[in-house]
Length: 188
Image (tube, rainbow, N blue to C red):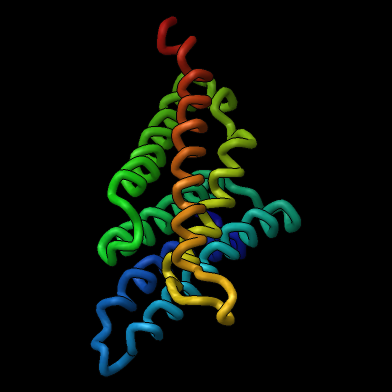
């Protein structure tokens, strides 16, 4: 692994995952319920920003590497899955929604890995529908982690719930898109 800034940021994102989960295990005497929501939301937002930052720096500093190309999407998926598991435990996300999103992440990761081994990795490159799903998901999750009203104007839980359902629908659509792209190779 090349020890460069983009790769260190990717590793930082992976290290943030236990914080998102662990904050909810703190005793209430140490951190109240609202404080836990705020802390987990802040950590998730930092992780989401590092998702953009490491890729930007890798391109800008010309420090792209095989390690970064492999672990960046893995780190992204681990952050989302970790946060979704917390939200499932807290009862803020429906189990079917969590299963759809987590199942798709595993299935498409496996598909991309298989496609790369048969020399067709570009056939399942990230599509616009996948990017849109990710953006909506990355907005929905911190809203659901925060759960409270924002400035008395926005009901974060309600908005996050609507967005996570939209993300789940886009998750299914994007999975079908990627599977359709891979189907000719499976048949062949």
